[in-house]
Image (cartoon, rainbow, N blue to C red):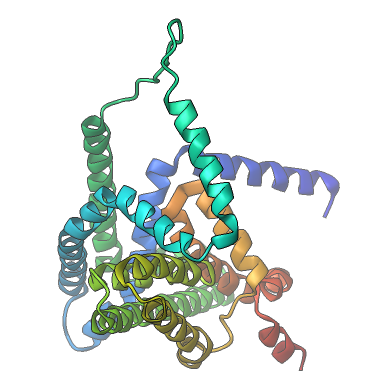
Length: 354
């Protein structure tokens, strides 16, 4: 490959990143719809084999999933609102609890408080305090809700059409080739990629949902407030390997410390979350999903950092599924297998070497 070819590919890559960044309002719901459709594809195929038409099963699955997510969001709206309102009190209580364990640092805390009092008591004549006026909270909330509702509608409708279309896209791909050998190879690759990715997404979604259910029930037994919220949070954040589990443990630890008087009992909730995440990450997921689709930690952190910069929290959540899709594609093309090996975990590489 010539230097001009490398330069052309580099320019194309930079332009594609810019397009994804500035066009995120369009690309984000489209990518979410494709991932959602891939996740539900095994269920639609299973229903088709049982005589249920794909349009009917796709409509029922998409609308049912959307209704379930919407109902869950409605149930969580109250606890989330209360948590936001109680954030100052939570911070004060947490500081008070931790301060009991920070004897050597009491002097620094007192000095910091004195500095705050001095800065707050500046009322001299001639001193003008400048406040930056920002848009009203209600207008911001209304704009955000409208954007979320629009994106959700695009995801639901597009997912429904993708699932209901059946094999139309595969037929279009096959028709673009002239030789029969190329048609068969393209069809085999497309079906293999769809099967592996859809099974992975559906399996991981079920595992994360079960993890959130177990954590929610366990925290309910311990006596944590709003255990449903922490269970849903654990399920969502578990799409972020390592980072999500760490964030869940830290948040649960903070809420537990301010909720229970005994420090020993307060550590029971985060310890339970650690146990659940270790069991899921080291035993359950590798056993069910298999080792072939495992990714190395460096690739995961780079993907999460890139997609979170590109699309924020939603990008961070879908970073690993998108990375799995890239790896599966690379495994099916000879020229890209080395890059697929880079994305794979060490054990997978060792198995290839053997």
